[in-house]
Length: 473
Image 1 (tube, helix red, strand yellow):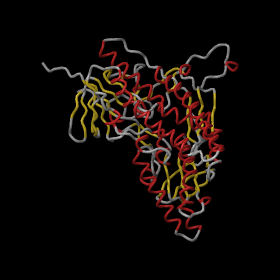
Image 2 (image 1 turned 30 degrees about the vertical axis):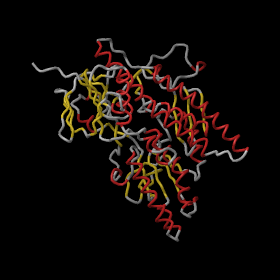
Image 3 (image 1 turned 135 degrees about the horizontal axis):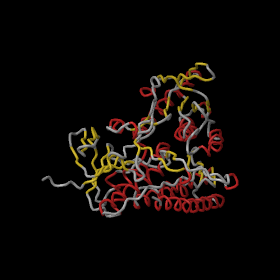
């Protein structure tokens, strides 16, 4: 008789996968845990813009898994998954290694979706990983270096034009960030900053249908207040992407925009491994994401848990708190709560990782599993260098530098481990206070004191948000 294998494998080291592993370690999970990811570093995606712009460094935003999992008891394996056999409960890597499991956590996330647009995958740049940030940095610098040596403005213009396709949160954050620091780069080379052009294209309204939609007005205003105003093209449907231009339709007219850099942020799709699983269509949504039970298990394979971007996890709107109506607008007879898919955000993945760990531990100890109730505590949107908008608990909107401090403080509180949290926070405080506001004058001392106060206030709000995320399952 074969000896039973009591081993839990986590596929994917994003928010859901990494925090599942860390929570299992904190709970002294009695079984072996293996975390598998194709990269050697965790990418804290909400702060990838800060890494790209130089506001934060690699150690803060993309720390190594070996460092984060040190002394956790979790085994980290760097490798690409080739196949998942749900029936045999086995995972095979491209290297040829096989891993059997008693329980599996699918946390593979998503990939960039190009939706059949001609040339988009081949010619547009994505922005989801550290490698993407490096490629984009190199492309922008190459274009600026070429432009600075051209005497004719018309020749320079395409090289100095950056097009961001997609008006969701990623597109808005990218366009705002670029419109602040690319002109600075060009000016440092001796060029005229105002020649830089950043264009944001979207088929519909900005942030339409997104959890950040309540920040649309703040986003639209901030985009116009950058170092160079962002040109927002609403109603522009991209039909093709070429190496040096974008083809699109607007007002029933076909148009072309030449650009040296084209960035694609127009959507995501489930990971190919998720799409390849032998899961019936009725247990997926129209995008191919996996449906899960209230305990985040696959209905046909209860030994498999799943969370993050690769699943569609619906729960009643009344429990999400992001679209709650003010009391004076509510009808006397409350509407029945309707299931609503949760947004693919870091706070959702974070809470799902905690909940999956809790239920795995409950299974191992013979306890009852708990349904997962994710609570949305607000939204955070980066709107340029040292500028953000924060919508806290769907009640308070904070913008500008105060919003930036709250956003940074919140994400720093959610960094994976206490030591990483401490190191990143102290380095951030040094950058925010000492280097930005070096007190050589009384005026700068007062300004620095104000920043310290803002940091303290932002950190306290961030702690409360982070604590509420940790406490809720």
